[in-house]
Amino acid sequence: MNLSKSTYQLALTFNAVHLLLLNHLSPIRQWLNRIEIRDAALAHLICRLIPVQCPFERTICLFGRPLLHIPSLCKLNPLYEEIVGLRFRALCYLADDCKEDVRCYC
Image (cartoon, rainbow, N blue to C red; front, side):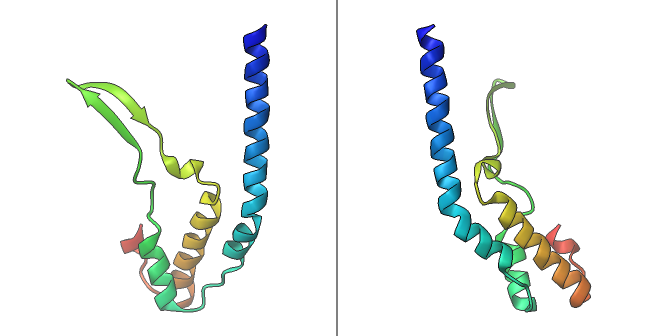
């Protein structure tokens, strides 16, 4: 009984910290969502800086057997959705407005 109570308290603490972090990141989130792509050079820079997929996911093997799996850390990033959205807007600008081939960024 004591273990489940401490686990519950730990979960509440984690949720409180998570909500506090999200509240503090709200202005950055809004700023990222308001960025309008109007320049091809900026769009190219964004597409080069933000990777297509998360580069951190790894499976560590020993003698051919998986020993440890490290999940993609991008999904733990609280700004992940906004950053991916920014890259998508840059790709759309290059493809739709500039009529450029964006396959090199995919």
